[in-house]
Length: 603
Image (tube, rainbow, N blue to C red; front, side, top):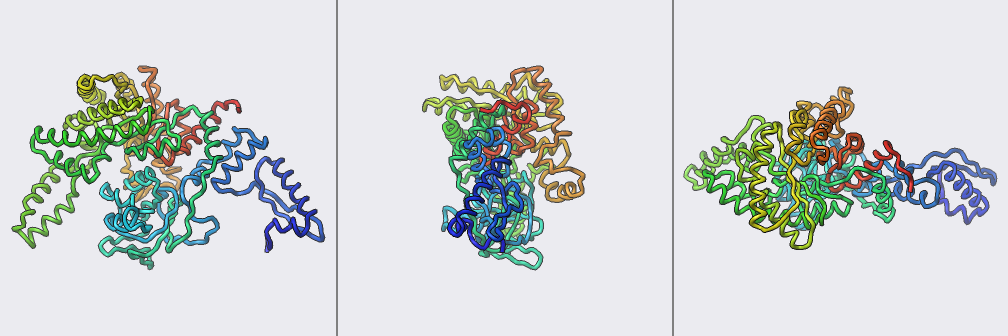
């Protein structure tokens, strides 16, 4: 037995040896200037030090040790910042499985949402809402083959989420990181049977109501209930990050779609919003019927009527976000996804129509179901990711983004009346040709001027675009002439540069590519400097030549990944933007990038 008694007992049983041991510990810590793991023995009344090494530590411990050593004069602030890795800092923000717990995972997937969660398995969002947060208050883990926007309420009611498919930038992963939900995605080892309410892993069957535990930090699925603890965020955490803020050059913004997200990000130190996805606001229960009616409208007049119904909702959303950000800049992306994402799936409608035709051909709901199915079929696209979305949607259906622009400025005016300084940045997505930007911006500038004239207000707004198509990066000098800012959407830029469908790639073959060293890392997790990065560098250089003061940022998931942040610092971007729970990580990574390149003096 290596440690038969607590070390404190030695002070009582042999005070002299204890004092000698204490002196040696202090000498070793002072010499190595780090916390030490010391092996020793006592033989015949003599103390022998066998070996020592830098001690392992949890995230909260790493921060406390670094701050304590600065206060003791053992290390400088620069050294303290360089000693705590971002993954250790991440441990300070999420629940974890109690250290020392012995367990064996039954399956592994992608670590899509860091943190640990335990609860009973449920297999649909309605059940999660009924049993979970806001319902009966039980801890539930939502298990799905894959999630979609309809699952948002169920995900928010759950302690954790497990999906069989999907990658690090899938719907489940993005929601998980945005809301801090521990999530394991793309766990292909599990076979989910949502109708039977169970999943299988080889011979193991997990049914609804069975307890499971997720380790979203490592992508592990564990059978049964494990103890989950929440690390304490102490005063040292704030002190440590304040040192990071003193040395970093890059600003850190957040990706946030609600006032609640925005307020959380500000608490974590966000200096603005780099991406507010307006389409996420359309999925709320009280809005979705209006959105669907707008999409299905047969005439422009009918569509405009429904857009007028949506306007107050969007205006209220933006007012709340501006107030939450309290004077910080807010980049709002106009509608991006294809419209069919807001409609029922074609497969579900086909099944419903076929069932009604077979069992109840005179049912009154059959005719409208057929009409809806026909409309969805009409809107169906072979490759929607490259189809009618982004600025293309704005050109074909200009009324949607005109309404959004008006709502942004009206919300800003209301926030200004409440004493808030506002700086809306309106982002036009998926531009590939300068003429797309010119057409959309010219129309929206007219809308903006008319809105401000109607309000009798002056608002500091700007227009920019998202760089997510290779052609946009290659012709950035042309595009910069018509944009006050660029934001790199590296999720889609990585897809289009590699020619990968990210969900399919992460689900089907990317893990093989990494395992066989075809690719060094998953390019959706860590920015590909040789390909995507080279395009970004060219884009930045050309844009600055045309517009020297252009504001440059990144709002893809890479904006919260440390090595990608270092590359953004090297490129000279102005800010990175990431999910709220990644903001502290980005603050530290930006500081470490600055220390690695410029080495500012210690304070």
